[in-house]
Amino acid sequence: MAELSESDSLQMLGLKLPTDPRWVNLAEMKLEDVLTDHAYCEQKAATSCITLIQKNPERERMVRELAPIVTEEWGHFRQVLAELDKRGLKLGKQRKDEYVNKLLDFQQKGGDPEGRFIDRLLINALIEARSCERFRLLSLHLEEERMREFYHKFMVSEAGHYRLFLDLAKEYGGEKRVLARWQEFLDYEAEILKNIEIRGDRMH
Image (cartoon, rainbow, N blue to C red; front, side, top):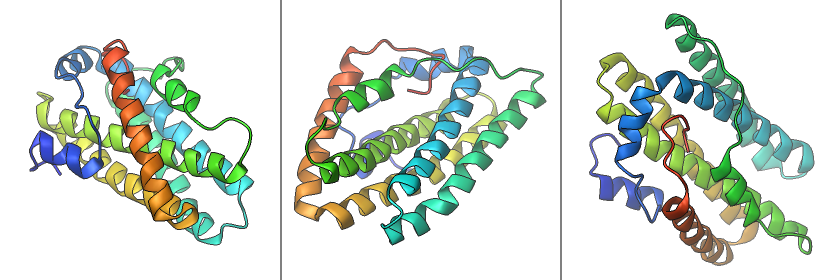
């Protein structure tokens, strides 16, 4: 994906709006904070997969597919911790994730449990897609070559996770229904990006 243009990468991920280019420069100036936020993002990704498995054990394909993702995401958490250690930095405190909280606000409330389950898969897919897009930016534009390579690996991983969550949603919810809802999420996410503060100390 690193070789693709910005428009091509957005199209591949389905995203409607690119990250403000100022974000990369701000992130590079606050790399310690970005690494801390990244670490907690990986931790929450693992926890989200565990919760999906716990609440939906009857969905056998999902359980099989997400079990190794839990291990992978926790491994990513450890990799970011190791990077902090290499730099003589400490893991800071977890911060409120305004972006994710706004996505959760769009999730169906009450009513149809199946609809809420599909929304949860789509939220995970969208978080992975936006993370992939931002890891791509870091892999292309950070001055430090080793960190460009560091984030390239995360970019590739997140792309696979995005596709998996979207594929699972289509399998369990029906492609036509899910793609219609996915477009609603993409439009909503673009509005979030238009209105949310650009923070160099956040992954999202």
